[in-house]
Length: 254
Image (tube, rainbow, N blue to C red; front, side, top):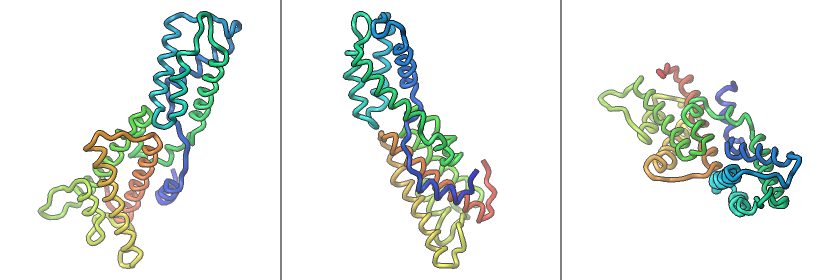
């Protein structure tokens, strides 16, 4: 495991081109590969249920990628009803469709297959399954909810007198306060230290206002790429909290 400061820096700089593992894409790649190797290609006979299944899988794949790859999404819809002939497939349509599928499949196999190494374990725990299943808004909402929940747990260990546990942006400005923080990130006696503390407080506060609250309270949809960028941002915040917890000698309760 990389140290937290290194992870924070690498997340900030990381670029990616990731397609989540898609079961419909996997099915189609395997089916087209098998059909292409058939000794009677392109005149092998397919059952009606098989034809319907392939068309449905193409339609579902089109739906899955319509926000992130509109070209291929539209092509799969256009080609699915032109693929089959009474006995076999039309070679040109088959080749075009198989080419598109192969391109996406290879891209799927070659994401930064360790991209999740850059995502904080706490964020992975609450968001990875949703992201890989295509529920991007839910994945990002869970990530920022976890930041909020962790911050509230930290406050509960070190409460201020006569106050209730704050929530959302108020929790961020209380726990990571630039004036009287529970979690400090460095020596605040220096101007640089004050700026770091203030900067993180505002960044965490902004995450709650700009990213967590809109997704939590409105029926918003986001693209796959936007979701991964937000998960990286959430991870950067979470790794920075790790640093502050260590610096402040706080013992957390899970």
